Image (cartoon, rainbow, N blue to C red; front, top):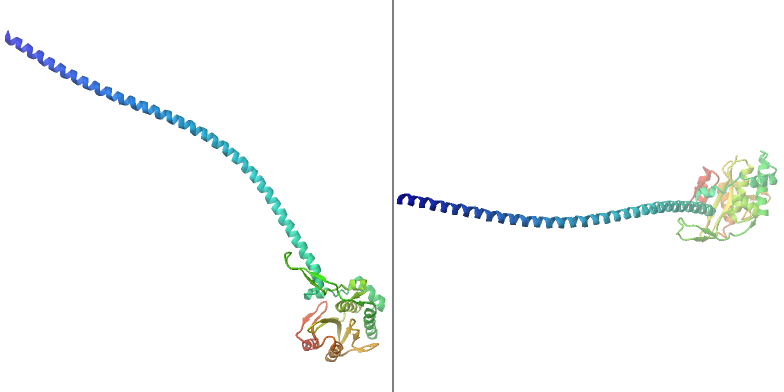
Length: 320
């Protein structure tokens, strides 16, 4: 009996100890689970807070995006306005450039029309021999009655044309003329030498040496119907220049007609020719007092232009 009770006690004791161990284990597990649940709840709370912060940030970002979209729309509208203004400015700039080009073209044309009167280029000089001008033609016909083809008539009529210029064109010095610079911003220069067209000399009945020479050369060229060479000669000294008319004659001879100097090759009342060197020597001697040391420096006509360093150069050229 005692043995049985003892065994029962041991069994009960073992059961109690086992139950206590099992209870402790389950209590520990329950505590761990609770702790884990608490951690999960904390994390959940943190996550919810982060979600709220994120939601607030999203709301803020959405507002910023809306503001940015509004600003972008405003910027696009301003850009459209700027593009429109740019297009207008480009059109105005193009118009200004076009007007500037027109102004420069008009200035160049005006400069050409004014500066051609200076006789600066060979082309300018040649343009003043206008034998086909209607006023020149009419005056030649009036003075000579027209070209007959007779040699005697030719010499007589050449002298008549020379005499008409001497008797009807009053010598006058030129007024000042503006010399326009290459660019509008350049410096304006005033010169006291400009050339008249032969028709202007006829109309005004006045001119200086080159005006008379150009008129007479045009008249002689018109009278001979362009069959004979007619030259304009330029002489120059250290201080001044002068112009006259000349034409070559057969056998290496030359005739010079100088209406402004009231001189021609031959005796008074009888136009003639001399050898080139004699004709030139006598003419230059006529000007020795007023133009000491003068040399022939240039000859031109409608289709001829030559420059010379001295009179000898012209004589050599004329003999060729």
